[in-house]
Image (tube, rainbow, N blue to C red; front, side, top):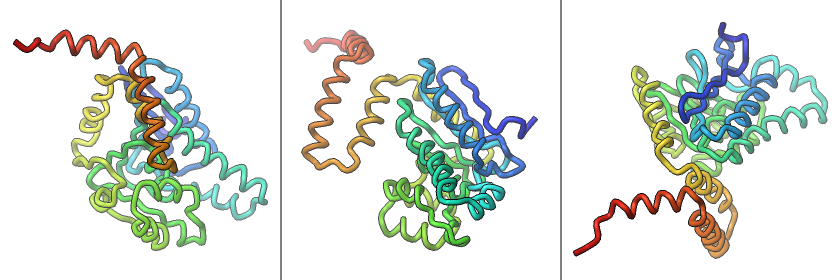
Length: 259
């Protein structure tokens, strides 16, 4: 039954699916849910079959942010308790970046506050046409602090300031124009469209995609010369992988020599 386990995990072919399973709470974040997502990500990371991970929500919404009970605990907790709680979410956002394969957020309904941060932390975001996202933390006197580190890397400074300080919900189409969403699909065909999108990763080189993901995020903060040097190092590593050598050999075998 829905709600028995805070997180559902399954693997089909090359796709690992992590489902936030608190639909009666709009998949609001609490310690059990955050821990469950991290456990599922680690399990997927250990599975050599997995080429892509999809995070989605059960029911009508992706994730509405922090659970009301968590907000109550925050209001009553001391410094060390609040620090421990904040670090748990920090670890989740960091883990998504460290996972070797792409992590895709499939957003249906609302993704708000920490839920919006969770979606934005993923490598790719696919949304239904009726999806809504936002950072409403300032409305309750809260600072969207950790999600700010993610948002600032996704959008311009002016857009980030607007989203973080006004606390408004925006449509999927607006979010795409801001650079927060990769693709928007019709509500009626959303599941099939997401499946078609992520299944493409099964055809690609796992090692090449993994190295590309690592390099892309590693370049954050590097100077241009340092980024080129790092890129050159990864280029060499990629050439030496079995997957690269096998795929290049297969490609060359199909190329007809020029007459």
